[in-house]
Image (cartoon, rainbow, N blue to C red; front, side, top):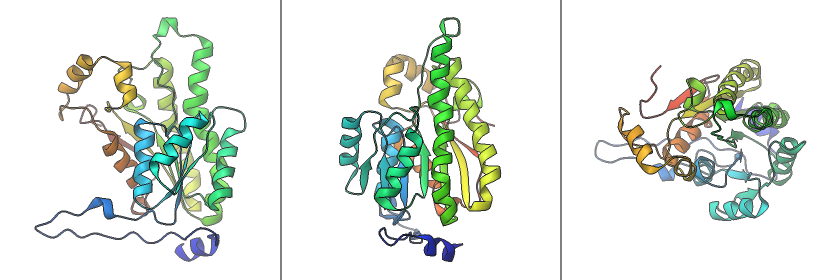
Amino acid sequence: MIRRLLRASPRRWPRPTAPRILVPSMTTSPDVTSIQDFTGQVAIVTGAARGLGLAVAMRLHERGAAVAVNVRDAERANAAARAIGERAFAVPGDVSDDGMPQEIARRALDRFGRIDVLVNNAALPLTTRFEALTAAEWRRAIEVNLTAPFLLMQAVLPAMKAQQYGRIVNISSSAGRMVSTLGGAHYTTSKTGLLGLTRAAAKELGCYGVTVNAVCPGMIDTELTRETAPGELLERLAGGYPIPRLGTAREVADLICFAASTSAGYITGASLDINGGDLMM
């Protein structure tokens, strides 16, 4: 498979290199910041202005990837790309707009010549309660949280098939595994649907060297979480977890990077939980 991948790699962007395996000694810990296992690879990260999206875009870049940074607003997309580094490229646009998933994939290919990783992170974490939920808001949540990831997966697939290699990571939630603590019924439903889409795509795309997995964060300490609920409520909720704190965006980013790496080549269709033990199943 590696020989096929190298033959398919365009000349204008460096080919992926094998990950450098760090073996810790008995007295020292490995320097994880020195791992360059995404060198030569190209990743698309949606919803990368802040929080989990920005954290994973930065982590992929630190580990050697070129990153197409998608944010709805062009100014914020450019600001995020500048903050991430020289191999980051802004690809602004609303993922739910007609043709935008295809445009994001096209622009990444035009710039870098390949697509190795797709992280479907963009989402609407709406909190409207059930009885007040309108059909229009329901449809909007489904479009952004479920339909857009499906269309992005379709859009990157031709490039991944040509390489016989790809990693797709869909960011679901603990809400998709049970029910949202803060989000509304439309958020829970869309995140549950994303897990079904992950499994169905994994079943069909594995023969092309493409894995499809989902990461399901619990309560993570991000700007959005702090905007959604008061600090005292978050502290009370986190205090009841087996690991009694909120998770960090960096911790989630590292799990996403694992799922997107060559090390996870025999994992597909999985839902990877990261929630401090709030949900165990």
